[in-house]
Amino acid sequence: MLAFVIVTGAFVAVMTPFVVYMYWHWKNYHYKCLKCENLFVPATYIRHWLSFNDIDKRKIKCPTCNKNEWALTIKGRL
Image (cartoon, rainbow, N blue to C red; front, side):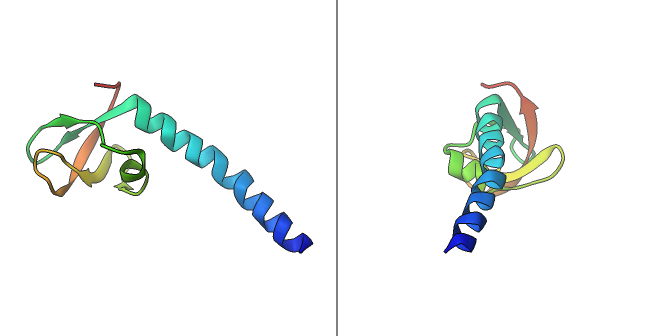
C-alpha cells in the first residue's frame, strides 16, 4: 500500500507541471493551417493536449479543412 501511495504521488508530481504548461500553451498560442492558411485556436484543451507536435508545428484538426493537418504555432491569442 505504501508503494502505491509513493508511486501515485510521484506520478502526480511529475505530471502536474506538464498539464499546467499545456494549459498555458493552449491559452497563449494560436495556429495557422498549412493547407488552407486559416488562423484558429483549438476548440478544446483536450484536443490541443492530445495532438502531435514538432518544434514549431502541431498536427491538429483545422476547423476549416475539417482534417488533421500540420499547423504552424504562432505566439499570441486570436
